[in-house]
Image (tube, rainbow, N blue to C red):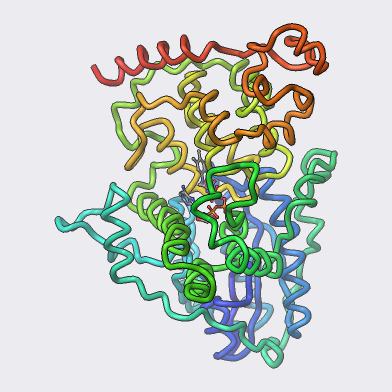
Length: 479
Ligand code: FAD
């Protein structure tokens, strides 16, 4: 019998239970259907599309090397899957389940439609390590606080060994269905916007399963030991940068789990590995909360935050997006995001705090910008991060804790390396004045070639005043 494997965002051959199941049964037809409207209002953003193009290209080549193919289609998922089954004689469609709300509804409709057409459906877990339905608090509800959630999950977690890539050599279907051309999906920057804006992304990433495996291997073998000390410093290459690979399922959380644990006692301490696995735990928690509170990407989990009197300031939003707030650390981070489609975690917290508190702009506007510009924008993690920063989420930082962009700057970029890398027009300033150029004496600015208001903006707000305004606004939430 022939099985269609609907690939979605599990773009890998290793540790892919649905693909392995199909290969064990007989013929395998790997299919990707481009149907962005079905994911609305969270259809893949611009950077996502660039990554997807590259990742599909890589996957197509790997499948070909294995004697298989990648069938690309565009249209409605149900119609395309039915047509692919008909053309290849497949009697079963398998996929890895997704947890995003719109996709759960879509998947249910696809299942019903396929079954009505006489095609069997099997689904497999693997997006996360825990089962959000099985993990419950003592009173039977979902968790809203991370620490007890992770304690419970960790105590019973046994993800097992990742699966090897299945042998697809003898698994060709009797007839291959037609495939669209990858370029016809219109995912490249040129097709999207008429210009190639992905240069910085291309220099930074190798999308696809091979790039993910290499990144994971380098991280666990060389960086994991120092993760805990280095993870907060954006100028260091201290974190794994696995987020887009995990988002696109080019590596599974089980593979990451096994790789980190595999290095324990092999040069990496248990504490070092646990510090990293703790962050994988936050990913589990984000998905848990999204599963149980599907409105998390769109509305505050703490309802009283609906009353927050946001500023609706488009100029401020635009200055933040473009990295022109006049706060060098914030601007460095926003430009890193624009250039490479990724931003360091501490910088995500700093820029999110700056937008929602110093500028009093709605967290949903920041969430949307990240979604469009991150290669690994992830509905669960992004919404969790923004609601955490805005104080309205599950286990969130309280709104009244407002990051001071200057002390964050001197603490986490003490030498100013990160700022110099991303805000080159300030690079000649002495470190002492780099974090707050408006405090530099005129002769120092002149010497460094900086003219505030011309070569670099004046600060868009005064942090002390902005903090007062935010705390005043909070009073309306807490009436
Ligand atoms: P590492 O430190 O190496 O961590 C390894 C993996 O653990 C990450 O790839 C990620 O899958 C997971 N992880 C790490 N930190 C977190 C966290 N705080 N919450 C949930 N999972 C985590 N992460 C995304 O994957 N996509 C997003 O769209 C996203 N948006 C965010 C928005 C805001 C405002 C904030 C504060 C955080 C956001 N995060 C997001 C979480 C985190 O910042 C990134 O996962 C991390 O910076 C990615 O870099 P890394 O892979 O080097 O992380």
